[in-house]
Length: 296
Image: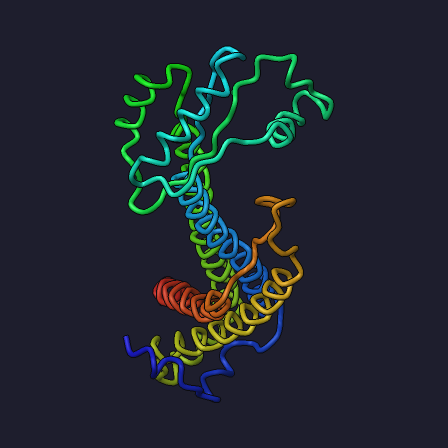
């Protein structure tokens, strides 16, 4: 199949396909709507990937050391743990959280006026790893021997589910793009079949005067591919405008913000009209060949 020859404009062949009608409107609307949705699915996929990478990096580099010793031993064990951490290769920095910082961490559950002095709240030490990291198993053994009240939490049990959830969301977004392409192909196939059926008599006359099925199919392929390209381009532009209007990334908004494109990724939606035209081309070509075979 010579794609270039099929897409070259032929005024005589283009008369086979009506320039207006519900099939034209349906093709334009479906292409635009699917391209609009594809832009948001693509933005969600990229944002989920960034989120997974950020969570994996941040949680992999941080850990928390809990000192659960009795109140009279807590300060001494905290100092001992800090000394061990400063001597541990791969630890970039370690610091004990202040009472105010710990109260702020517990405030969402216990309120702002939590009396830390009256409660057996463990002392927390923030540990930040350097490249390539530290030996967590060896550090735990040393802490167990020298600081019996210390418990190291490297966030593994928190990191894995969060990263898996973000990666799952990215996979769902990619699957959504495939479903959008499939739905677009199905709708364009229906529109092409309707146009072919409506022009059955014209097709019969063309065959009588010697027109080949390839010539007739080319007219439908050109018209529907162009309609899909125009509709997808309009939908892509509207989708990019919608993405630009989304809130910028912020710590307060969490994952609900920052769903737009970044940097060179803004060029990715430009591929959507091209992909829509390819889907329309393949769907219309298959529908035209099959329908013309039935009309023989």
